Length: 408
Image (cartoon, rainbow, N blue to C red; front, side, top):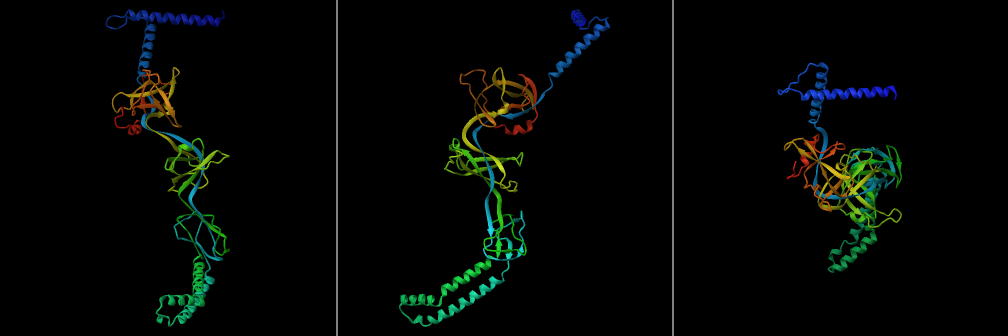
């Protein structure tokens, strides 16, 4: 045997002898609890052992910090998930309806405008002249018309009088002249390019001095107060979706934010290539954070099962090849410290965040069936043991979630 093995053996023998000596001396203590010492080395070992034991006893009183949540009894929602892109609820490309030179351009991209605000103004000189010319021609036609019906008020037959008026209007071209004036006034009004509704300016294409022709792009008005997302929902999940169902949307470009909305339309036609249908979700965007074109993940409320008991999925751990939750038992009502009670559970349906707790099919007595409102541990419980002392770090927050009649 190697020398280092002999050394190890000797060390173990000496340690064992020391422990036996300590045991014998402890048994030989007087009735008043004091030991008859005399051996300083032995007494120091005894003190060390007693100190270690005290420290271990103290450590069992330290509460382990954990995170908790309330067991919920509510409507359990099976969510339908899809992807889509943000689009404004309303968008209006503006084009020039008359030609001319831009003499005023107040619009700037990104600027918020109200309905009727002027974005650009064209030179009105030609259009003012056309209005004056059309008005003069109309006045001449009206005079000719009055001449032709000057004595018609003496005609007793009302039908005959009305027929003569219609004929007179045609002969002097009165209707035509009225239409020419209306057209000239319309063209004059179109020299002012205005916002058709409140929104933000995008794609401003003209500036002071620009020359525009009929049909040229001027700008685009985008209403960002509400956003719509066309989500492509698989045909297998389409029957779960209805107009009015609640929905949430998250965008990678806006981390940590969840936007809430509702389904406003469901396309009844399924695309044969993608085997999906378009479902439109509308959500509020009061601060214009969501920019059109952003890709997002849409979650739509599908099946809604009332009066179900469920917990966060992260609360479930495995012990002895069975599913377990740790139920928090406070030291006293309202206390954030207490013990973690190991409870076997049977799970049912689950969505992406929660899992349903149901009675065991075999009626096992050791299966925990919550009533709702109990507090369970959802973080810091991976290595917990039954009856471990814990402190709920977020107790003040989750106690607000405990329904009336909850246990904790």
